[in-house]
Length: 416
Image 1: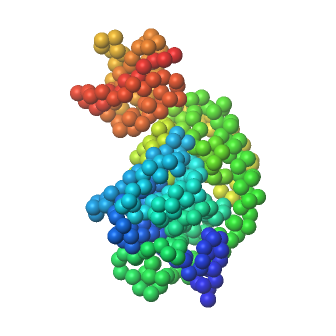
Image 2 (image 1 turned 120 degrees about the vertical axis):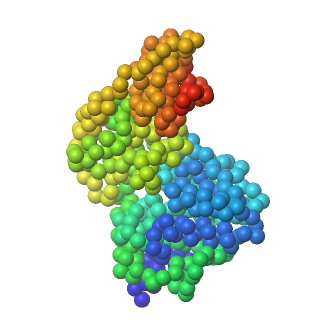
Image 3 (image 1 turned 135 degrees about the vertical axis):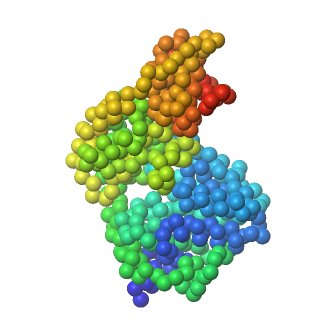
């Protein structure tokens, strides 16, 4: 009875039938089961899968597994705000497309995706659309004629270890791996009844306050978006300024190491994030920021949970400028070794980790005449992302990469 009541409550919040919703052990498990189940159910159609370049790692890992098994995958690019285009999905559809995936909103920058429009295009082509709604489900149901939906309770403040998998009636689905009679054969093993009941109760609770809290948190995040560029030099606020979730704001600071900045902010009493929200343990550059073409080093993601006080935001804005300045001073880049070869200034940053190559580029760009070139030698993979992003932020021209005896040469033309 408790399980049935929780399913009814969750289905009402999602906007689906109760018999279409299954509880899983996590949001990641829901994604993997949803992707593999639809691909298997539609294998006679083909083995082509479409994903966006900024999906959660669980979706991308499922895509990698599909490709390793002989399937084909198309990644749809995003713009600098992190949003896909409906046209991009329409052009990616093929006669052998078995499934398309699109997040409802991005986990790292908060950009909301045009799910309803993409779902319409997919429906016309007869292709089911799987929506990863983990980040947005606490704020409201996902609009559009989607076919499969996944969610994770901890994202809306519920307990960890509970996920949702919704498969609409009529979608061909074949669960993979050993199954049993539980959860429509889609999530084997005994259900965690206490956690499921708590997940459904917490979803109903946050939904009851979502509309009012969204207005308040949008005002706070907008305050951060508007003030940070004026308080901290050389900062870019990323993500769509309008179509975004209420409680997420992300910005990137030039000449700053993200992990160092996080530690300093933590000492000041603020828990923020950097890098990729779904692969944070690897400390690798964010695949989301890379796809957007924005600065990856010095990235700060601020998440404001329900109930965040305005006073906390004000104190964060007071602390941030001095903290960034202190980190920049501590990181003070070593003096770059520069030479002139064929009228091109060469900066040797081999063996130095980002943001040092960018710092050294910034120090010498003024030494070349307008129209002149700077060739930065670097072997840190992050330089491939950060040097073009620096050029975009500073109004310089990124010419491209050139082969080098060691590392890679990144060529920049001074425009101003």
